[in-house]
Image 1 (cartoon, rainbow, N blue to C red):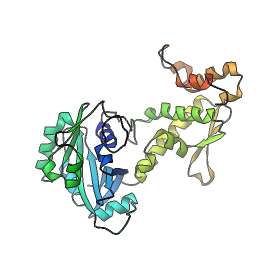
Image 2 (cartoon, helix red, strand yellow; image 1 turned 135 degrees about the horizontal axis):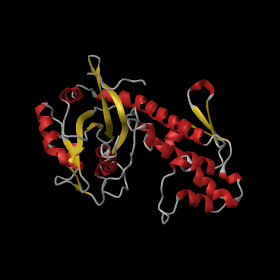
Image 3 (cartoon, rainbow, N blue to C red; image 1 turned 135 degrees about the vertical axis):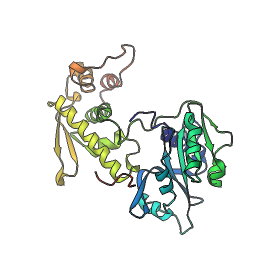
Image 4 (cartoon, rainbow, N blue to C red; image 1 turned 60 degrees about the vertical axis):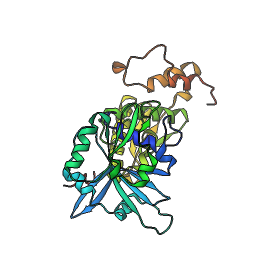
Length: 315
């Protein structure tokens, strides 16, 4: 899964994250992300998997979001979103409502600015009354505002949100990404655990460190993330059998990576080299690095010594 496919989601997360480098008008209006990749029943044995769910507590308003990286909208999927009930979303996201109140909800499509016209036409052809939020490196804009709720319209400027920088990459890989995209993030988490002197770390803890929004994902997506992180951990343990060993934890519901030795146990003169060795693949596949770029792991070494499955969408 490419970072480009995740751009609309990252743009949305930026709008909902206070103190982002770019403006965060949805956060300012009280919207927060409550779930990612969550399956939602729409009746008749059918479902959709929402890419994100937002909630504005002050108005008890829900926004379920579908992200598209291409120019097309699936008609059947779009129409199924219209049959999802607000209470279904509350149950699926385990959302705690502050008090008994009447919920409101809308569907929001996310896309890339270059496909804005095609996406808008596709939504019209599907005969669904959903607004469209498009993003580029310079602006995020709400299109079809007449189809949006007052809550959403009031939060976003009519002429768009000007960006200071391209949307922050909060999620650079997800449960649909290639397995090997997890190798370096998992390697970094294992090195971090070794630097802290941990004797063991669970795959779940590694996943929580690698995947910033791990706890927000629906069950099926979380399980896929755990499988990919676990696979990466096992590959790394095979590369460094003298340092890492994998085993199942009690009950067999999680994998434990045992840290057999750490660079902190070495003589200070060899500590940096040891961290660098753990931070890369086997020597035959060692990546080329810029000699002028300071390695984070070198900083660690040279510093003070005190230091399956729930279903996808069903048609």
